[in-house]
Length: 330
Image (cartoon, rainbow, N blue to C red):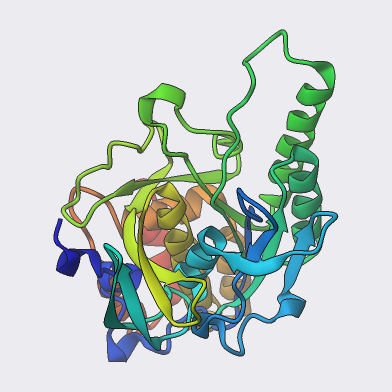
């Protein structure tokens, strides 16, 4: 893949960077992003990046760690930028060289985002889930996974209790919030990692490339596959872009897309009255219904463009009719 091909944004791959779709941007929705603080040293979220200028402040960041953190982590910065980043004039880092490159923005730049940073610790993760539970979010994007020490019987009692508590918290959260989690990059070796493998409530996300080929690192049996090769905001400079690949990068793009559909449901036309609106807004929270919509919007074989779907939604005389068709098994 050439350098030119690598400058590819999630909104470009979804064909969402069109002027007539600018008003479908996640407005009126809330998204939580849970991610690790970092792998080395004292790291956090790069909130001063131009992608988040005026939209994500330090007040929107919750850190589940005893020590103070700095705004220098790239993984969570890239995930947030893919989901909700603003357009900006920047530079692209590739093979040690910088190239001028404008960022076209995240998938849902109008959504209100909060960042939840955790240590690589199961108790910290549980605390973050509990905090998200009280935040009334529409979507939670989680680009992390846990390789369990073992399976079935024989796990240490305390460790098993931690896993069970997290499972319970996710199932409870999933009653009112879409939970989108990266499946992990271990392919068939490890399969879908915990907690993405909590099938009751989680949309687990794998990745495919711009040619529609499922990426080798994507496990089998994922709920859904999205674009896993993208260019996204990164630090330490406030205008930097960087190439990344993995299920971590596909996940926030899908979370952002869900925000767009929820916005459309909230703003849609319901000529038969308020009961239809309430019915749709309740049913669109259900994982199975959203998964049906996603699979009819993007798939790695037909490459259906979300832009085509959203453009059609804008012209709908009755959103409920469209919703019923998209959430049917046909």
